[in-house]
Image (cartoon, rainbow over all chains, first blue to last red; front, side, top):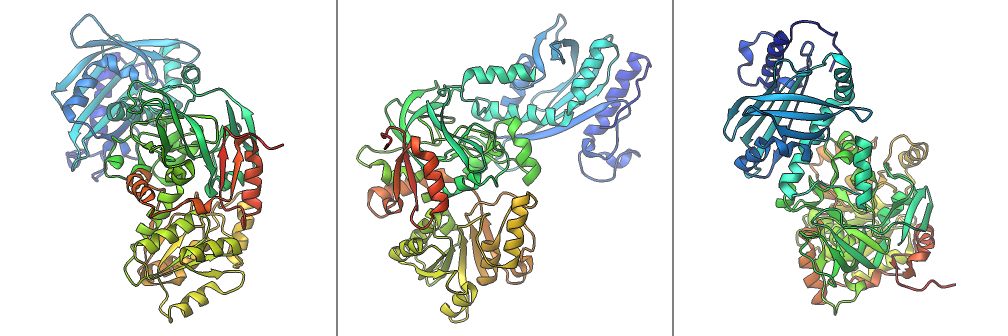
Length: 218
Length: 395
């Protein structure tokens, strides 16, 4: 990802832009209708381009479990901290389909962002977007499609994110910029481990070592 | 507990470390009764495998008694088990198609990046074999935490002593898969580079699979003698020109299949191998590949090359032309141990396969550093070292 200048534009416009970035990143079929998308069949997020002031991260993983099972697990957002390293908690907010994510930030800080479900197709897709007035302007989508043969389900995750303003925002930006692709890949692989084996692999010889490693990551 | 730990090139020590615990639900804790030093441990001892950290517990050939089980383990306390060196989850795509050593879920996520960068895909988790393969504590210790204990460990009956079944953990199935990868046909002549434990088991397997002739290549007289006893003809590469000998022994045809049971630290007189030795010493270019290079030139057109020997990095001056122009098929890889264990255990019980001839020395775990030194320096007579944590140290 390239670095971006900080914009002071209206937040609403920013959210609209995030939606644009993620649509571009998700683009696979209608590429020829988009002037600014490379003319090949690669996923948009692998393009050698940047997405304006948005960080866009896309990764996919194939999991040897049925699509419906994976969809159901993800749809309960409180499950996400079990495999997403930077999340300490996700809990239901007041309105239906609204969730409050607590994101780990450096130096023991944490940041909260409220999202709402932007779109949901049963068994296929869940998209979420930060609500207006949020500290962080972000959008994400996870897709589930049958993998070829007996391989299970292909899970695709795309997250678009504008480096936010304010003290906490800068902290999150720093965190996100650490290595967002690596983070996304690790999170999806942990999801795969949990779904395929019921546990997340560790070479720790003792439980205190596992706890120490988690603290270190925090 | 006491454990053999790595501290640097040719520096291994037996130290007191924390006992392992059940960490994940499918874990078991095994109290080790026998554990062996593998030829591939010597690559670690020589410091040519990247990704080791001071204090890492080595060892990937071990067996023992189940003393603790996690809630999702299918093992019971008191069972005797041999533990495969490859850690496999049983649920991913590769495990399901019996490519156990390519398990996608056994190498912890944060450890996968290094091997993914080197090879394009991450490696599976292995016991005691550097942080590229998970950084799992190994079996040259009193106790081992065994993940996915419902998939890997082979329960062995009490009447088979340790020495008969220990090598199910690695070298016996590795030799077997090496021969299988050579796709042996009746009337074939197969040459095996390296008559160490894997090479010797590959010779045994190749003959069992119906090869008409097997030729073992090494430079240690005692190892060549063991190969001869198994029924192989031999070439001592310090006495004879290997390629010329192979061509003449086959009436100018060349060998039908080659097995490289040497790997990355090949000895050899060829000029490119001497250059490779220098590169390895200064840290550029990891693999000395003279065995594979020579094998490719010795195999007849349309023949096969099987590579059980360990390579970790890159090599140059590789005869890619010989590979292509002669149409040679190459198969390689870490052993899919779990694919072979049941079959081989049955053959051991029937007395068809014997592994005890290989063991030259049995030492207490406390003397493991001496075991490494002698296995490394005196390869002619130290063919296989078995370590016993319970055994009294000789003073």
